[in-house]
Length: 613
Image: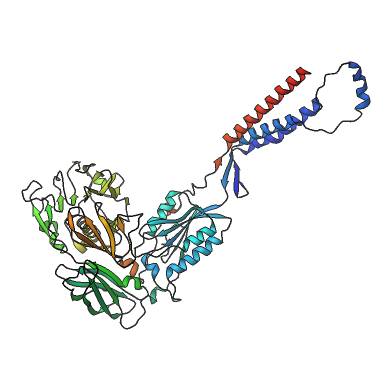
């Protein structure tokens, strides 16, 4: 394949191209043999006697128009038979800039890591002028296209500068896998503070790691916040880079309308490196509905990531206990280990005490036909589900997780590769729901909304809740209960860690704080920027409040060596579908037919002229 004017030309059967010179030679021989002079009607054969005297030498061959038409037809047919292909000679490259929370950390130069990443990405794009086209992506918890496809190097370099850092944890490995699986790119260029794992295949991936000195990284951050209905306010904090330091935490609280509620609440404690510590700040003012909490190191030591020193929390309100229907007792289920929620156990959904307007967990038992509140169905019986879809019989081979939705709140801090399930029911997810976990045989967990209420169905067992003894399943269970309860009209006010998914029936959603924050029109059902969100639910005159935070140990612990893992099977997949050559055979054959038709018309016209003469 050869390049010409920015395009690459090739032939599937190049030997057919020999038809062009052979056809040209035959046409020249034919026309010279019969003569190039046109036939004329003459009145007498006596003029023939003069021919030897006038044609004393062979005249130069001047091809007529018909010669060129026939040569064009032969050439086009030869090109069509050869299977001529055309493709862009420029490479298609995806630029991915990590925009997760850790990229806001400061370097020794004072610049942020993301600023260095954007500078390097822009310079690399400009260096490929005339040799590549680009698509530019920002990668945090989800992959977001910024420019492209087929953006010029100058346009890509300009688009890179528009990427803004977020407060989200990254899902960089999944983002790279999705781009490689898409097949539209010859290469994927990644700019991040996380290096590739040594076992990764780099045949199509080039990762530029922003140089950092992990040993000198120092940071203090907020891990979680709590504002109880009683007003008790506390913050869990952590520290790296020093053996210990005194951390000061302060909170400015506000009423539901945004007006200040009392003075600043303060607390402090000596925190050891690498050991989370909860600081009690005392009671928030009586009228406080939400608070902005900050943490810092009073000694003046450099904190390299100030963005994680701020958090938001809303006051919890008394919510009804979650109804539990299970053949096991509450103790056997391990629910006494979950202190953040209260539970009440009922014998069945047909019990007079069961309330369909209150959240429920139904474990290995028939499901209610209708609910007006969130429902968590664990290992449901075989058969149809109330929202559509179905549950099959238990499958011993279905318990291997092969695919998952990393960006869903249920998967926060969950590593699905560590989930080992001896057996599971394969689920056919209801229409409109999201298949959060999957096996090779089908769905393992389905999450969705019906009638404004969230539901979650898991085809695998999550009980008993064992806490630290089974961390992956325990984290998933806590995420599930928090996600369900925070989305229903009877749920407690939430403090979301990561993007907040608003209930489908939520209206008049807006940020109370910080000033200038707004919900993106492109994603009206979620809020990603840290702050406090207010919204209304139908039939509830009281506004609901939710706090959005970007707490992430993986992002804030700058001393921990995080890597991007990319299996060889992912990176070595066949390259770009975006540059698949275009086969021009059909068009060339059509042009050859037109040339032959023109030749036939020319011959017919000549016969008409001769006949007239």
